[in-house]
Length: 220
Image (tube, rainbow, N blue to C red):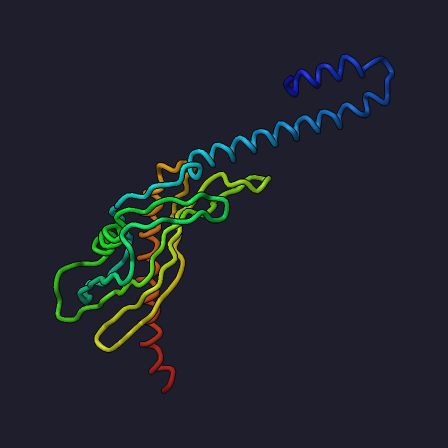
């Protein structure tokens, strides 16, 4: 029996002329039915997300991210080193989202780097050493019952810039600019998260360089 059938049945039994008690109870009963219908819709949304994104696990393939960086006209050459970062790995379930498998991760990181930083050889070279970069899908939105209804890509990263004897460490968390309810779009989340990661890493280097240049003037 649907909520509408139950409400009609209640009206037929309870509503009589001048029946003040029934008329007082009816709004409460209607509210309860609306709440039940809302819970059903919320449950269906959560169930749909579980099937679409987390039910069978997501699968990330190699991508070619396009980070948006503003490099100065005169800049050093750049190089990337990946240390201890696996090419294929399993992502465990976390925060209500099932895990999945990442493939071609090294190729994705290298593609994103080379799309962001010029590869031509120069006398002075900045080397980005990436020591940790792990992708996962985390909740982007939840419903009133706490069920996950969409996911966002996330990368926990750590590494350092090397220039001669200078060592500038960095670490952080990058998130994709997009979200999804479809596990088939996990590769798009990974691509967007890699773009965010390189943008953050570059912004951190620019900030460190600016602070370093301002120190002598402050000490004078």
